Every structure is written in C-alpha cells, then in structure tokens.
Image 1 (cartoon, one colour):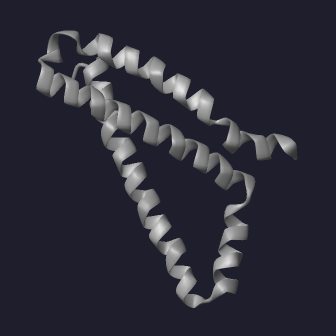
Image 2: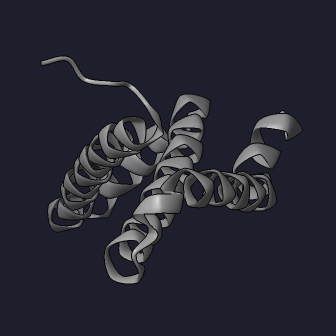
Length: 117
C-alpha cells in the first residue's frame, strides 16, 4: 500500500511535526525556567544566549509552528464535528491563507530587532 501525498496527508504529517516542535519548545522552556533555581546570574547568562539572532529566528519559526498547529486543529474540529470531509481541501487552503495573514501581521516584533542591527 502506498500513501497518496495529497492535501489531507500533508496536513496530517505537518500537524504531527508541529506538535513535536511545540513539545520540544515546552521542554526547552522548562529547562530555561529551571535556571532560576541556580540563581539570577545563571538565568541571565542563558537569556543573553537566547538573545542571539539565531534564537530570534527560532522564535519566529515557533510562531509559525503554533499558527499552523492551532489552525489545523480548528480544521480537524470542523471536519470531525461538522461533516467537513467533503470540503476539507477548501477548508485547509482557507486556513493556510488566514495563517499567512496572522503570521505576516505578527512577525514584525520578531523581525524588527534583527533589522535594526
């Protein structure tokens, strides 16, 4: 049996991958907050590290991951509870457009420090 890599399959795979990304962020967040027990200096040093541009891009990626995961969750809810299996592709693409709009509107705080120098 071969998978058919169509819209529904990609949505399913991306939902799992983004869920894994969110889980990894939560683990990293717990690790970061645990540095508060080691003292202010330890936590401040970690915060300085996270101020690097590569981590700012990571925050932007996390923002995109959360947008996709949440909107796809809405899509799954609509399909499961409102019989949307017959129009799931349309719902997917409408939510992709909404996600892009949300991402572009919300990306400025992440990108502006990188553009400022």
